[in-house]
Length: 342
Image 1 (tube, one colour):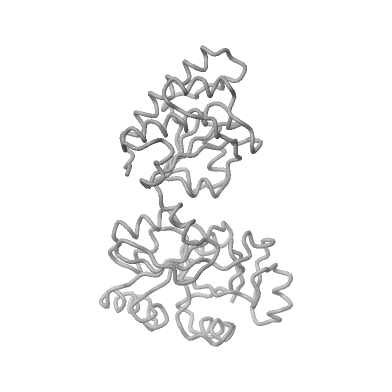
Image 2 (tube, rainbow, N blue to C red):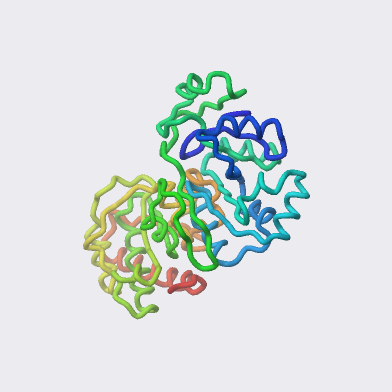
């Protein structure tokens, strides 16, 4: 039995198919709980072996919230439960809690790598009694009850994950954790992220133009597209947070109905990347900055212009910014044609 790091808290881990290890995990669990452990996966597609058929809403939850600090509880048909238990040669009650199973895809490269390399169904339970954890504290607290502790430093959040029960077309919070309902709802929006360097010229211009284009499609004001389930944001790979858009950028988008009066720059982060359904970057180097933070985001990250980088206009005259606004608008209109909105 080993203790693995996650972005929430450290977890004691064992293989579901190892009866001795499972028994040790049950002894370690506080309060003597008897319900099954949360199974941790290292890829979204690994959930299918436990669930069978997955509807579109469940797939959206998995796509938007995984990897991350959210465990999803699913209802599983009797035939599927029996087939999975038989295939793994374990008791159905060790996998499923009645008719449900809880799965999580942690956002921690060490633990996902261990799960992939083990090629076994891995379960985790919180190691230790507290939430603010470091490996050194756990070593003293667990005192020989585990075989190994992988020390990856302090947990990012030091708080338990949120657990959601997945219904056919909605979710229910079973356990409050890092994400509350407001954050979950925000994460479930269709979100477009534009990325440049400083988040004062190119990406905020793209954000303002995209907001206007989407608002016109949805027939709402640009500042109300969130009410229709769509969010447009921007960030900079080297941004200094809090800066306004350059005056030339603001003037250039105004000609197309865009508004940058409330814009304040922000630094690109893994949270913003996870939130986004699609990420359009101004250059290939910006795309690399995205995947350096979240490698799994490569599949949803692309340059806004398919075959070229969009040059930084900083220092240029007003005509250069107007040309850039026209170029961005055309590229965005084409990109948004294939994006589901509203």
